[in-house]
Image (cartoon, rainbow over all chains, first blue to last red; front, side, top):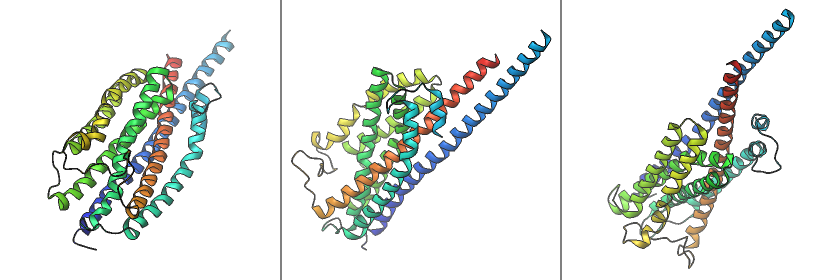
Length: 62
Length: 252
C-alpha cells in the first residue's frame, strides 16, 4: 500500500468493469438471438400449418 | 443449440463448416471459460501480491498487468478481423465475416480498457490524464475505427453486402496497427518503448515479466471465450434471418 494504491484500484476496476460489460453483452445478445430464432421458427410453423390446411382443403374440394 | 446451424447448412467435412463449428464452439466455450477463470486467479495473485513494486513507480507498476494485455488484445482483435476480412474477400467463407463482426465489439472494449487504464497510470506518473502522444493518439484512432466498423455492419441490412464493405473497410483500417505498434520507435514519444515484444528479447525483470505473461494468457483466453460465444450468437441470428425470409416467401 502506498499513495498510488487508489490509482491501481481505479485502473483494475475500470478494466474489470469493461470485461464484465463484455460478458453481459455476450450473454444478453445470445438470449436475444435465441428468442429471435424461436420467434422466426414459430412464425414458420404457423405459415406451414396454414399452407397444409389450405392444401388439404383443396384436395377435399377436388 | 448446435442443431440450429447444423440444420441450415449442407454437411461439409471441415471444422470451418458453420454447422460443425457451432457444435465445436458449444463444447469449447465452457472449457475456455474455466481456463480463463483459472488463469485470472493465478495472474491476479501474481500481479497484486507476489510481484514487487517498482523502485520509481511504486505500486502503479501493477497497472501494467492489466494495461499491457488489454493493449495487446486491442491489436490482436484487429489482426483477427483483418485476417477474417481476407477470408471474406478471397474465399467468401461465411464464417470469416461472422468472425470479423463478432471480434469488433470485443476489440473496441479492450481498446477502451487499454486507454482507460493507461490514463489512470498517466495521472500519477506523467501528471496528466491524457497527452496527445503518438501511441495514445493512434490507440484512440483504433477505438474510433472499431466503433466505425460496428456502425457500418449495423447500418447495412443485407449480410453479403455488409460483409464485403465491412471487409474492405477493415483492411483499410489495418494501416493503423503498425502505426500503433511502432509509434514509440518512429517518433520520440512520452509513452515508453516496447519492453517485452522486442527482437532482442524482453528487457523487463522476470519478477514482473512472469505475472505480465500469465495475465496476457488470461486475457487471450478471455478473448477466445467471448469471441467464440459471440460468433455462435451471430450464427443463430443469421439462421433466424434465413428462417424469416423463407417464411415470408412461403406466405407470399
